[in-house]
Length: 200
Image (cartoon, rainbow, N blue to C red; front, side, top):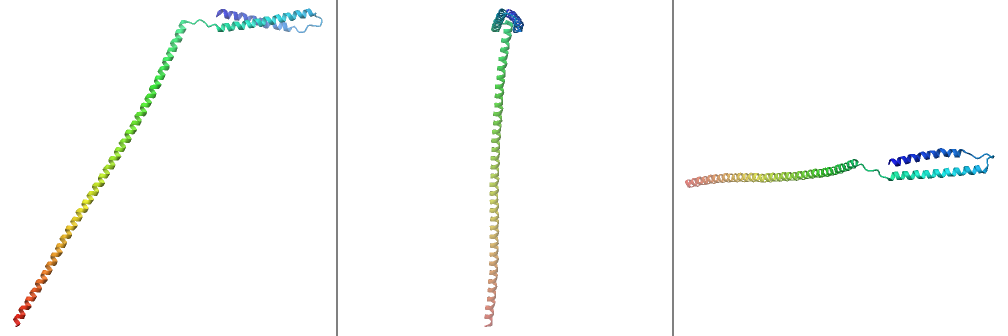
């Protein structure tokens, strides 16, 4: 890794040198009319050579950077152990969290089941209470009907008894009155008969 860093540093320095050199070459503008064609050709060759060197250095620098990035650093055993331990701890925490979620879901389902069972039991008790109340009301109505029937029957029997006694009393009075009338008539007839006999 250090070799890669030093190589990249030297490459960067060379690249910077090339960039510094480039403006010097490019600073040379068009030659005065007094210079010869040989100087122009020499300048063009130096510029082409410098451009090629810069391109080669850039390509080499990019290749070195790619190689440095591709090389994996040596793993520290302690760091690896820490990473493994951390992974195990995270997995254990994840398992515990999933288990807690499952327990929470099971607890919620149990609570809902208990609530539903309690509602069903309350509904059954309410129906039993209503049925018991209806049965009590029916019994009370039956008792009242029977009692009213008995009361009416007793009243009717009392009235019939009173009526029979009244009829007997009336009949007795009537019979006595008739008997007295007959007795009086018989007495009157006897008196008349005795008077007629005495008159003869």
